[in-house]
Image 1: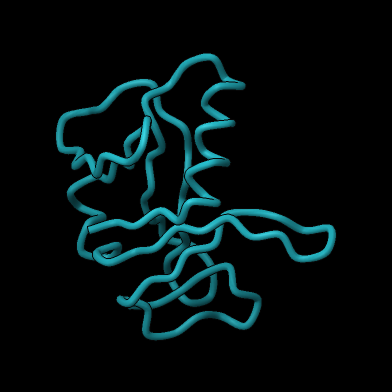
Image 2 (image 1 turned 45 degrees about the vertical axis):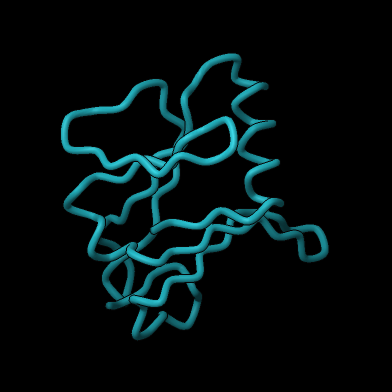
Length: 106
């Protein structure tokens, strides 16, 4: 199960509206950084073979089946801290994060 906070959902819906198209977001992982994995979030216009959809309010969160074991239980939030803002991921699968916070290990 993937959870999206109300703040993140509001931001995602606003961005989809601004784009004028799209069915939701793709969340995944890629190999990078000093700890091994980093989160990927991008807006998508259609699902693909091998994707798993988690319906939200007026959009979907799509995850590739191969990434699902790394993301099970993920919570997506949108936070503002001073002049910085962005999506924040809370993942019960994480065992360690690098010092800069850009990558993680499961």
